[in-house]
Amino acid sequence: MSTPSISVPGRVGRPEDALARYGERAQIFFEALTWGDPTADAVVADLVEIGRGKGMRMLRQGLAEGVESLEDPPASLVRLFEEIDRRPEWLRPELLEEGARAYCRHPLTIGLALGPASLVGSYVNGAAVEPLALTRRFTDQGQVRTYETASWLWSAARPGGLERFAPGLAATVRVRLIHAFVRHHILTGLPWDADRLGHPINQADSAYTLIEFSLIPLRVMRGFGIRHTARERAAVYHLFRYVGYLMGVDERVLPRTEEEFAELERIYHLTGAQPSDYSRELVAELLDTIMPDTLADQSGALAPLVRRLARPMAHGLSRAFTGDRTADLLNVERNLWRHLPAVLAPPVFLFNELQRLIPGEPDRKLRRSLDFVDAASAATAARLGVSHDLVDAATAHPAAAGS
Image (cartoon, rainbow, N blue to C red; front, side, top):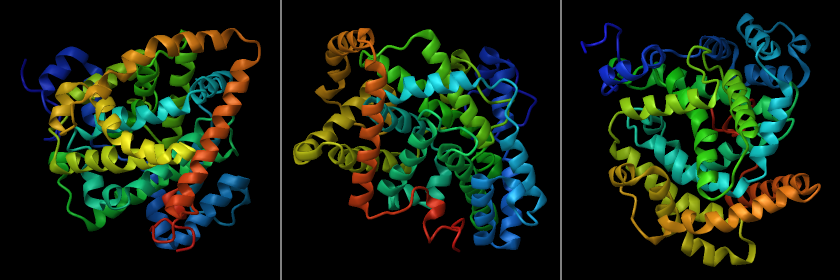
């Protein structure tokens, strides 16, 4: 096949193969590598002019009280709230609720998926982690960054979290603006090779991020013996489709169905750049430090033992979830922990299927799971000495409302 006529950033490998297999979907993915978020980027440009602190306070007020409560907001901020307030015609609130309930019943397994599977699987693409390499925040403040991501996820993914004035929707929009601030910071003050890398925090990479929180955790849960019905899986994907919409992911690249989520994952890995030295640094920080400390926070009196066991377990699970090729590229250790999902799957499957049969137990399990999430989050915040939820509430960040 001839070289594609569209402009493809240098980071893209095997573009001809991707176009041959996936056609228009691959072409849109290539184009989306060069797209920012025009709505959020315009807001940030205005907030830089009027003052970041003042602008972020207006954003927070609009999220809590509605745009009509704001006095003389910039037109870009009004447009942002028009997007937020205009629910897409495809949105089904009952599916949001069902997806949240199915997702939040298994927080510990999701936590195991997000690190060794989701993040490691994305870090293998050296070009995609370049914004992290420039800002250095994950390796310099990795545990705080992980805590902030978890704070967002469990506020957005819990039942009712994406209602218009719910904390999860507010947190999701704040994350969108955080990404826009980082783009602005990179494009106005840091070296960036757009011909090679595309746009910083572009639409294609942002769409792939949704896979890290949906497709991959569902796959990991299945590997551990936790099964979901077709309806539950569709509801989880619907939930994260709406998350993507609120995050500003362009509808042309935003996946809609399970197959589209899976296809986007295949395109991402088929065309991904080789891992960088910083990719391996991120993985080492995640598996050697962040995961052991996080799991210890969730283990009460067993914390010292868990901290010792968690490092080899994190490496073994990462190899099991991402495969030997990715694990070898990222210096992930090979050990017996990689067999843990296969060992646990039969009893876990039986236990969960029996729970489904007990009247009222799924609801009780959901309440216990959310209590666990909140307790673990509080323990992590206490250990790290943080009092904020997202980075824009940290005083040193350019998007801080008090700046």
